[in-house]
Length: 575
Ligand SMILES: Cc1ncc(C[n+]2csc(CCOP(=O)(O)OP(=O)(O)O)c2C)c(N)n1
Image (cartoon, rainbow, N blue to C red):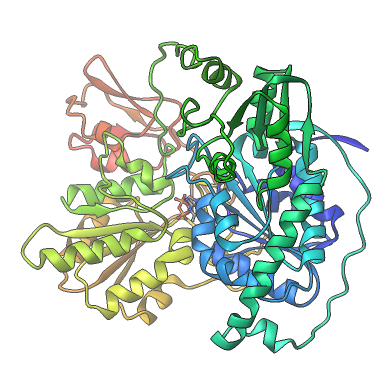
């Protein structure tokens, strides 16, 4: 049957057709819709959100140890979090097929870096497949499970944003019967202590050699001979761009770029006059072509940063310009927290206390933008509390007050250990946990604090205050961030406390359906407004400044924060 599917939906379909029994992920753009689709469309697959990517990969490998097919899904930086199990997993026995999906984000549409995760396949010595279309996303997912079971290895399926989010026509197939789960004991292959791991390492090396042979003969890697004047090696979406730019050229399309198909590459190189490697980000394939002693062109002309386009590829190979179209001059439209977002008032209260704020990753990261200017560092998920601890330790007492902000999902992901460290090593910093009862930035996924699983079952809901106290924090306050005066006062107390302090800022995300927004629209009494712009400092999209006066537009959801902070008492509304 034919369907129009995004790459992410096609991976989900591929998992279903491959007879997958278990799926786990932590949300992250551009990967999120894969697990959401599995949970919504393919109820026979047990699917769950993990608190982080390391957990996702480990629970999936547990399911695979029990003989069923399992998939772990994450964005590229999530693989960094899962890197510890990833590096040793290939040493262990694969019973049910196991596939790791890494969704990379060239051009950083929604990420903190644009690392090229193809290196992880090489680093962990596992095969990697790279689809170029939605059809291939489906087919390669199935093929990845077949390779995983026949070679006894985890397999990486690597996509990029354009493949994940583009729609394409897909021919679907019938699902394979899932494996029957069973428990077997294979301690020599499943207990990775030195004596066993030492014996397993050569197994891994022999396997990768066997996989190289497979890569040379598999139809996943195919030569398309046309004009021999230019030969292009490409994979993933870069293959589409190169094909569009040079439809008459010859191609070696690599659906499985690792392990590298040396013999096929040599065969192709011998048939073309000028050899090019077209790939986004790093010269991953180009370096391997050069290691074969073959001359080729690539990153000397093709940009290493950002996404490619057919025009960029055309310009690079033909040596004419950059291929980047002149951008129309448009007014800047920076992203912003929603009107009524509880993070805004909390960040405002922190800023008013003049502290150095170590940020983290979530909607609140947008608080770094003017006019809030409330965030001073952001590195990766979970780093903020640790930054605050390190800074406060070296600065010592009597200097600027140090704080950290972290969302609830990020706290469960990788903030807990940082807070444990802050308590254990007696840091002097205030940590504000922004508990909006969801993972807002990636589309409102449930997490261990929401009391509901991905499959919609009621479950335990973590009590943050109890957890924080159990980690060793004695000074803990839970507040309503909309009550600004109280929030400001509590922040001041927390910053003055001589030890680790935590404020739980508790208020659901304004976009949650369950949230009871007041619905009343506030307005400004123009006679009373002095034009002081204190309310403008909130950076709320519902507040404008016209004719030297504040004005509230129809985006207002009635959170009342601007009314609370207005020094002239000029803002109000009907209840
Ligand atoms: C390692 C890693 N995994 C996933 C992501 C994608 N991501 C960015 S922020 C975020 C969580 C945001 O939730 P929360 O901390 O609760 O803040 P909110 O957006 O709800 O304010 C996620 C999953 C990421 N950047 N890094």
